[in-house]
Length: 493
Ligand code: BGP
Image 1 (cartoon, protein in one colour):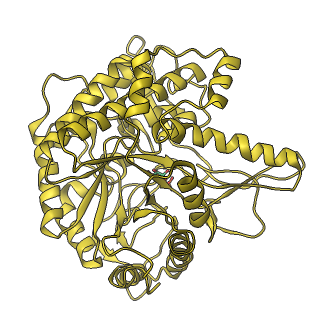
Image 2: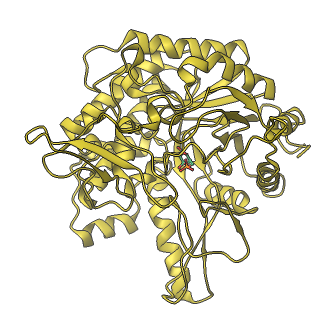
Image 3: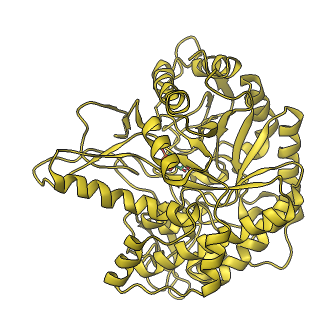
C-alpha cells in the first residue's frame, strides 16, 4: 500500500477567494477587498483614493515588486462602480454547511481553509476580537467535526487587514508581528480541540513578487520586502513557540510556493540561472523550515545595501521554532534560460520559456506529470521534515454541457498524472508525506487574475466574471473520480 491509512486526502481554499460576506458579521476590510478582477492579459488592480485631493484611480497591483501599490499620498480604497471578486466570491460564508457536506460526500479527510484576519480583528490592531467572526469559524469547524474532517487552517492567505496596510505599510512595521501573534494566539486558543494543523502564511515567498498581496506592503521596495519577510519569519516562529507550549497536539507548518525550474539548455550558464532562481524560493524555506538565514541571501542583502531591523533574539527564535512540517503548492514546472533569442511563454503568476515537452492551459501554466515527485524529493532531502502538498490542480474554463453536467476529463487526466507522480515519491523514494489537498476544490476566484472562469474545482459554482449567477453547486465528473481515489486510498487513480 502506497499511503498510510491516515493519509490526509482533501481540498484547499482561501477566505479571500472563497468566503465572501466581506462586510458581514463585523468583518473589517482586508487588502484583497480592494483588488478588482483582471483578465488573462490584464492584471488585477488596486483601487485607491487620495484623501487630500479626493482623486481616485487604480494601479497594477505589482507583480515584480519594487513598485508602489498605490501612488504617493493615496490610500487603497473600495470605490463605487468597481467590481471586487472577493466581496461575494463563491459565498462560503452562506454555503459552508452545503459545501462541507459535499466534501464529506467525496470522502475528504481534511479541508484546508483560511481564517480571514479582518473577520477576527477588523482593523488588525484592535484591543479585543470580534466575537461574531470567531463564532462563524466555530460553526465551520463544528461542521467539519460532524463529518470527521480535519481542518488545516491558514492564518493569513493573501490578505491583511486593510487598516494595517494603510497605517503601518503592512508587514514592513515590526509592530505587525505583535498584532499577528495576538490574532494567532486568539484563534489557536479558541479552536483548541477543533483544529490541530495550522499554516502561518500562504506562499510566503510571494512577498518577493507581490508584496501588497502577500503582506499588505504598499511601498514594495527591495528593502521593505526583505523587512516584511523577516517580520513574517519572526511572527511564524513565535506562533510555533506558542503552539508547542500551549498544546503539543498542535502542528504548525510553513507554506511555500514551489515549482521546479528546468534549464532550457545544457549551457552551464542556464544551470546557474536555475540555481539562483531556486535560491529565491529556498531562501524562504531555509529560514522558516531550516531555521537559519542562508549565506547566499545575506550576501545578496550586502550587495544591495539592504539592512534588516532585527534583534539577536529573532535569530534564536528562528533556530528554535522552525516549522513542524513543510507544506507547499505545486502546479507545474518552469523553464529558464540566459539565451536571449529564446522566446518566452505565457503565464500570469508563472512565466518563463515554453517547454516543448509539456502541454499548457489557457493561462500558460504547464502541466508537468513529474513535478510532484521532483518537488517532494528535493524538499525532503533538504529539510528531512514531513511534507504536505496543500495546492495542486489545473485552472480551466469549464463549461456546463447540454446535459447540465460538467465533463472535466482534462482535470481528471491532470490529477491522474500528478497523483501517480506523488505516489512514486512515496513508494519509490520513501518521502514522508502527510497529505494532499487539491486547490480550489469547490470553484472559487483566481488569486492571480481575479477571474471566476479560471476554475479548479470538483464542484462547479454558478457565478461568472461579472458576479452574475445563482451560486448553485454542481458536482463535476472529477467529483466522482476523486471520491473513488480517496475510497481506495490512492490505489485506484
Ligand atoms: C496559489 C495561491 C492560491 C491560488 C492558486 C492558483 O498561488 O495560493 O490562492 O489561487 O495559486 O492561482 P490562480 O488563482 O492565480 O490560478
